Amino acid sequence: MKIGFIGLGNMAKAMIGGMLAKGIAQPEELTGSAKTEKTRKAAEEKYGIETLADNGAVAEVSDILILAVKPQMFDTVIPQIRDRIRKDTLIVSIAAGRTIAQIEEALGGSFKVVRCMPNTPAMVGAGCSGVCRNEKVTEEEMAKCMELLGSFGLAEEVPEKLMDAVVGVSGSSPAFVFLFLEALADGGVKAGMPREQAYRFAAQTVMGSAKLMLETGKHPGELKDMVCSPGGTTIEGVQTLEDMGLRSAVMSAVEACVEKSRNM
Image (cartoon, rainbow, N blue to C red; front, side):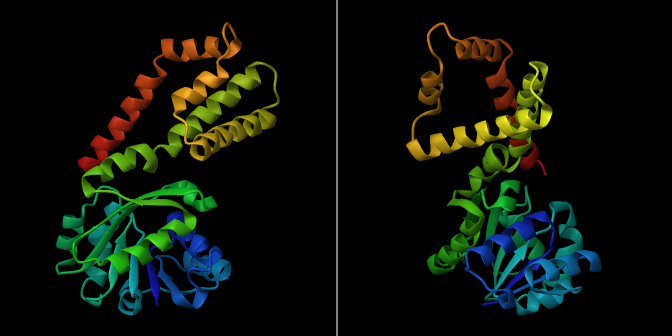
């Protein structure tokens, strides 16, 4: 099976790295295209895959074709490949805000289309991807696609109507987490902790807290209560966050991302 990538940016590299690390694909099964020779050469050297300058040439040989380009590049890239994709090729798009119907229309034909929204933690094998498909994709094909997408983190199939929510909850939200991490570390620095140590403490705490929730299956409110001793330091901090509107701010940020995705 030949898996092709149109675009070799950070997300494509994360996907390639995950597939190779899990042994789901071998280097000779992967090929990709990118605009610059520098990007192509870097992918060749790091992963041992074949790269080409011609997007259409990658499309021609691919059994699974991953469109790893930003939505604003669609109008440039799609005309280069739509007449060179085989009808039995499974097309996977990671472009935010581009619906299956829009992808089908852009391709101008009847194709098997999967729409995926991964996030940047995929770069370290800890991604989160929402996935949906059109009716032409078989159960067997979807299972293979989910295996590939699961090689760099969590991948779950969702109805397409929830894909904009996926953008807000997982696609864009790593940036929110990084903002929180930076602020948490800044608080430590203010209290006298060396900055690099504050970053390590903040990052480990966020990672450990997420791991605790995922592995115990406990509600985040229950886990919060476990930390809040009566009359203790934590409940004082929680009240301050509540007074400053943390929950409302986060919900509004997610809502803003969802609306932007719907209107792209």
